[in-house]
Image 1: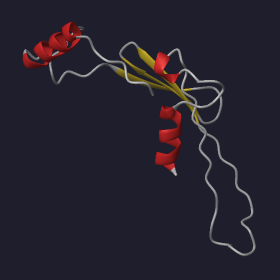
Image 2: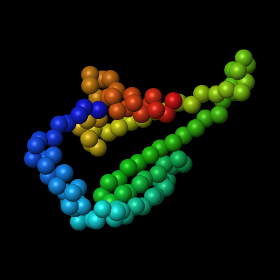
Image 3: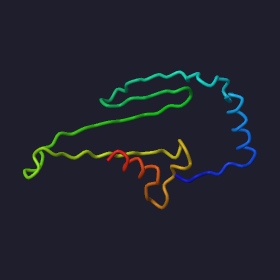
Image 4: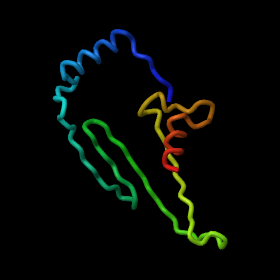
Length: 109
């Protein structure tokens, strides 16, 4: 994920807001956004609404016979897709996955 540097004005604004315990949406420091979890019509699909933010997650699994030489071991595969609509930092560069996706995949392994 590319770092987007803050201007001096943005940095000063954020530091002042933190110091004064103010948020742009009017919440206090320890106020939470309303959370709603909805299960989709497909098995393993769920939507999470956190305030005005909406996220969709899909999970699936498959059982396969392990290799004969390693009968007690298996494989887990993670596929992570980060939409550029969520952040321009998730934009793919030249057809390759971005750094954020790569870091998350390494973290899960």
